[in-house]
Length: 405
Image (tube, rainbow, N blue to C red):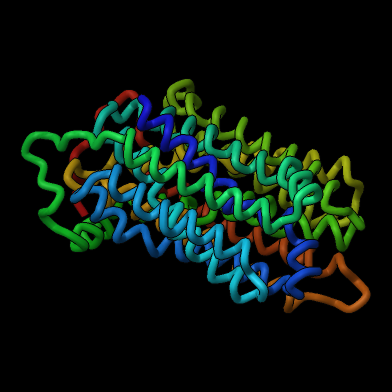
């Protein structure tokens, strides 16, 4: 339990790093001359590096276990990247630092899910995964108003340097306290190497799950971690503290949403339709923003809260895919799905930066954000439609070890 608790704390840091830049937008723009496109690229660099690292992490989890995998990358990538961020003097340094941090944070949640998959039943996986995500999402809360207040009081550079030290200490705690789970009898994690990913991609049962896994989290984290800051500044004239307050409520909603999704599949005896309904409600909230770019801060905050609540289906979707994974490919299976999840977020960060830039109209700050919200609506809506073809995974049933491709 001490090892899981340590990974949970490390995951709080991981969630913080993927969302904190919205609050620092004014400071990074003023101090480094960073543009919206550069900040979007920096945020995307975190997710793309995070996603690409999943392939090596999946093999490493099956071969070396979560203790060494998570501690090594978190120490050098996460802690080192945060210190490099603190010393940045140009936008390219922020981009490079975010890529380093992305690699460092990449194995943290996957190590936890690997332990859950090897230690607990499939039926309990959704709750454990969702609650780990919910606990980690506290990092979004820290990255909102508390970060804004700390940056205001001490400056963003000392705050980031302090976070780098804390991240290194967390990595050392993972090395000391995490215990690798035993492999099931007859399961050889070294058998297929990277070829295991090809075997997984041939499993047609995963195909309809992948698009929603890739898109469901992108609007929530994109709005919370990147676009809420510029949107509130450009449309409502908000300052850093106001941005922190609005995103604080959204972050709390993200925590609550992840907790709520966890037991719903057992309650309703379906994973598929819980995910469909939840994501459709989130889609309706984003559609409201697309149709009403300018309203008032109270309404925007409420809509952000709804998006935060409904955007927490990651754990449920991972459990949906987990039900079909062969035992010898657990590490590679969860990291493959996480690749699509985080890679989808990263790709959407790059894409939304291009959308906002291309649709910008001089003198009209609302045009680019209307295009942004419509882009989210189209992408999420399409992913939900594809997901309708997915085979449901009943929580109470034991999944087959392998399905025909």
